[in-house]
View 1 (cartoon, one colour):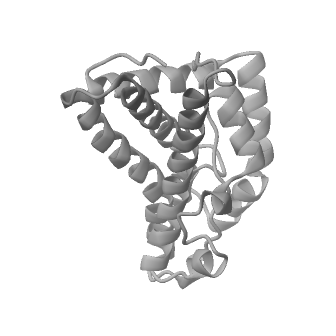
View 2: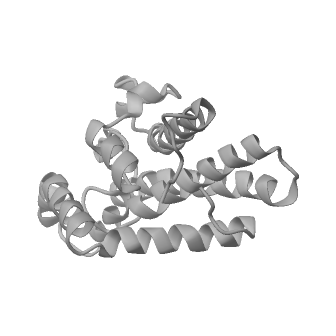
Length: 208
């Protein structure tokens, strides 16, 4: 989807890296902040209540984001036993990441839509909006251990849900590899959803 010649244009390369790190950092920081707000200091104690992007990078998730156009950050450690309402608060914490990406995408999208930005700044804003939408949509997929999978806890017992969460990363990896190279349902779904939200927010098609 991205057609920048990143390695021959320093500004495009820098914009790409900053936009990627900012979207990932906001997403994971929001998980940590919300968990701490609801009474679980686990993420804070592990140094995740920070806007330092290095603390939130997941090697595999970053590689997927760079090469496939979708990915994830390092999962924020959470102990639901510290919540007053463990099941509901855990879902809220999980949704905080995607919601933060949506809020940032809308904020930047309104500026992108209604202000005459210099070309380089417009390009940077488009990247920021793009990555925030990708992280929002991808992480809402109901596949463990993505954020959207926490909704499944409402429909199954704790043992089954725990098993899914523990084995989910292997399942997710298999699904992503299969869909990326053989049957690209997920990449196509994410691409169409991102294009739709980008158009709704900015009033313009994605041109990256």
